[in-house]
Amino acid sequence: MQFIRKTNIQFMKVRKIAYAFSLTLITISIVSLILHGGPRYNIDFTGGTLVQLKFEKPVKIKDIRAALTTQGFKDAEIKHFGAPNEVVIRLRLVGQKQELSQKVEDIIKTKITDNPFTVERVEKVGPKIGHELVLDAIKAIFWSMVLILIYVMWRFEFKFAVGAIVALMHDVTITMGVFSVFNIEVSAPIIAALLTIVGYSLNDTIVVYDRIRENLKTLKKGSSEYTNTVNRSINETLSRTIITSGTTLLVVVVLYFFGGEVLRNFALALIIGIGIGTYSSIFIASPIVVDWEMRLQKAHKAKLKAAGHK
Image (cartoon, rainbow, N blue to C red; front, side, top):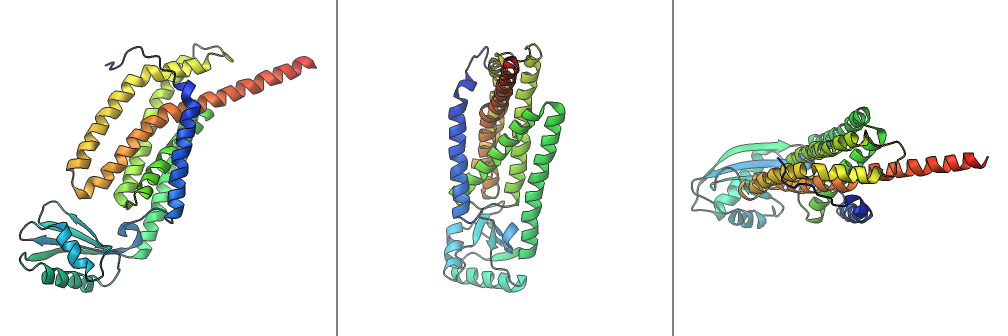
């Protein structure tokens, strides 16, 4: 199915502008992460206590927050869980499960007297486990990058692998940067979203690379038409890219608005990742291949010229 037919958009002509735009976003992301002392991890990584309460009637988050804030729990993360009468409260304070649960129960009973509740679940994550989760998440992303590099080198060429890895690092950095700029907590589902973004972006890049490789088979070695061939390949896959990214993005946007508080940040990470991943496949991964080839051709011509003078 061709959504867009016979386009001839000159993507490669604006690659320098795309580089500058991406460099600006990456700089903002890195500066924000430095100023915030790294990502803002939630208790999945820092350690803390989770308490799930089920009320007899629907309860407002602001009422629970007001009750806990007056008793010193102003940083508590409070979300509805599945129904308007169920809430999950995450507290960074790590203490005895029963003791902290009792404190929360007593505070809410005192402040919300007309809506009885029961404690459904109490869980605690220690700081050591949280630290191990951070390291595991970093290792997962690192090894995925290494395996992707090996795979793309085997299937294509080294310059293609470099383009793919740079694009993936670009996507992950900017996504984390957005979370840092808006001070959004990074939880275990967000790490899952980042790995999903890596896979999704790579898939999009591989589709473009496949078309580039097919079109390059008819191109003579050292031809000046290399840039035009890459540009034509992107245009030929543009319809597929728009349809795939557009339909996926539509589903994730619906999930963001109607999936509830628990899934909102996860969906947000996917929205950012799909958008920036589609952009990087066209304006980062492919242009890097072009610039790499241009440098090789320039070096080859210089070598031939030098040899001719001898």
